[in-house]
Image (tube, rainbow, N blue to C red; front, top):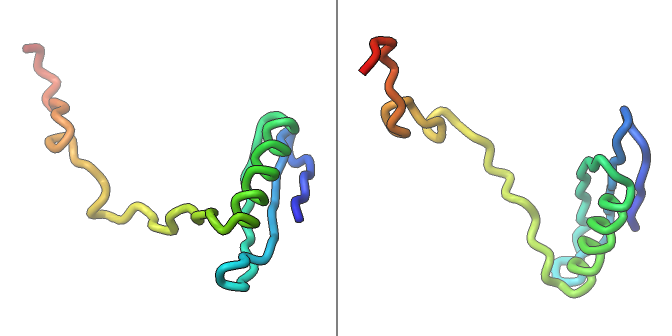
Length: 82
């Protein structure tokens, strides 16, 4: 079931539904600027869960090895004009 609630001038959509493939409760939330976007997203996620095609977002967080150094992205760190 989806819940949409206002928070700090935006809308938070929360979906909590049982995944038919794993029988686990799927809980996910996302913040939107417009209520219509929150409703559309919540309905889409619920439908995907019911069909068994929902893939949760990656829980991978950026670690120190994921942060690019200026050299890796080709940014010059020198202040001298070229």
